Image (cartoon, rainbow, N blue to C red; front, side, top):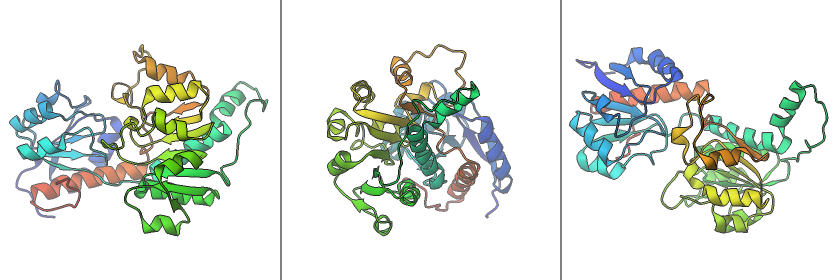
Length: 336
């Protein structure tokens, strides 16, 4: 690696103890001086980035025009996302004002895929309920009846690396696999999965798992109209982005018992909730609190990515992206 004359100044926002651990573990091989900020990046905190040539952000940081203008004024040249999604960044405006953006397009597809299947199994076999019962010396099986994944029809929306990793796991369970993605993959077909229209996937799937990015054309993909096409008691799993579900419509479908099982690792308004310990706080989000009241809803706090392997890859790729940019080299992970 080319030696830098001076170290690159990097501000890491929304930094947790585990971010510090993995970034410091791998930073010895890079010419980067890291400052960690626990706060999220937004219009109120962007002034902290003044004087930093690069900022590193995560899924719930808000980088709109106002923030980008502050970053530009403070000398920031690069935004390094330590995630794959970039729906929280005004990419077009960043391009207009000359701030470059890079990301981590994949870190551990298996981590998210395994989490998605874990949600399926927990909901289908009620592991979470059984765990609590046994802790209280209650060994009754009444109310714990589950169902096999074997021979169930599972619809996968989005067949990128995470979607394919999920398909590989589910093929081992003997599931019938239906897929929808505008960009079809030959690898999917070799797994015995079938590409179908999204309408057919909605109609025929016992389980629907979302693995697509949040884009204007995918926002509220799960809504009143799509839910009306689905089987009664369908299972829906979302480990991608919260905005793929129109939460009010999902709540209505839960109350009407149209949705039989709901597993979420993401939530549309998670930015004010997830990644923080709010156990002593009053959560002022009636929609989220309503979701928690349903016995057939399982929510985890955006931890699908959270494995040692994934965090190692995120840190190494992010640091490499930054170093290469300031050496005027391409990483292949640039958005433009």
